[in-house]
Image (cartoon, rainbow, N blue to C red; front, side, top):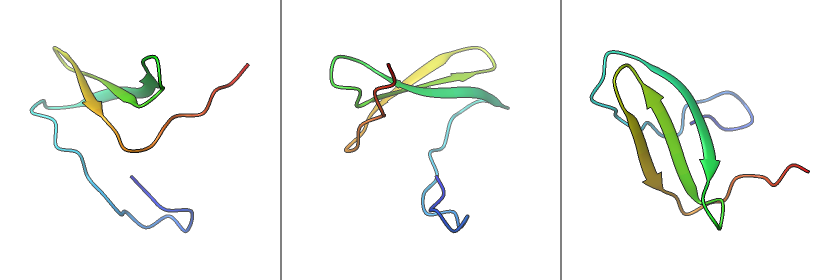
Length: 53
């Protein structure tokens, strides 16, 4: 994760060689989905993704 100035402020380790995409979902948009080489990972967040409609 990066702040608006482009500095890395956090890192989420994933036990894969590569990751492809991330997006927020779930009823409250606080579940982060991460696709990787052979799996999909989820992580409950303390922030919410935007609602775009």
